[in-house]
Length: 186
Image (tube, rainbow, N blue to C red; front, side, top):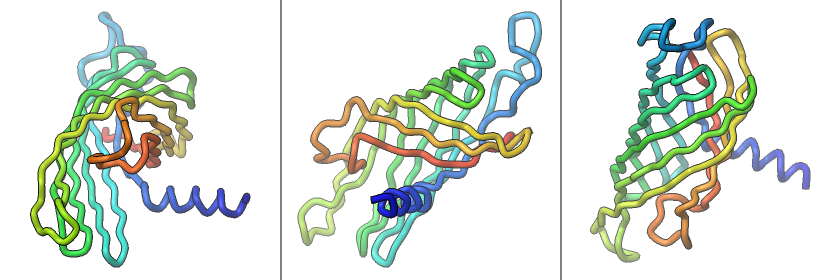
């Protein structure tokens, strides 16, 4: 059982590896009287890659955020995915707002509303590709482990509150894990 759990964790880490860049930690607390706009706005994003002999998934998700306080921030993230199953491929795109709250130095809460327009093959042998709209509302917790003053390892467990039975969904489960490296840009 323990071997299966470790193997599942390693598989998730490899399959869902998400390298992303977030924001630098400011030494001072943003407020109306101190800290300029450059201390409050951050840019970043993520990317992912997974594949096999008949499968390929490449994703890019840039973001821009605003630090309201040192603990509370929010912003907008865009999503683009290229997915290929055998001879059928699709370009998926979307985005939405997110909010992050740091409960402690290494623990944070996260929520994100996501709109995704994605391609779905209709019929078992059909080459026609239908475009579908899908919305998600992810909520969850994350853990961050600093590697240096500008780089950290993040893992986030999210649950999609709008997930129904999985039909016509780009996600196989309401539970999603995001693992990645975050690095300051400036």
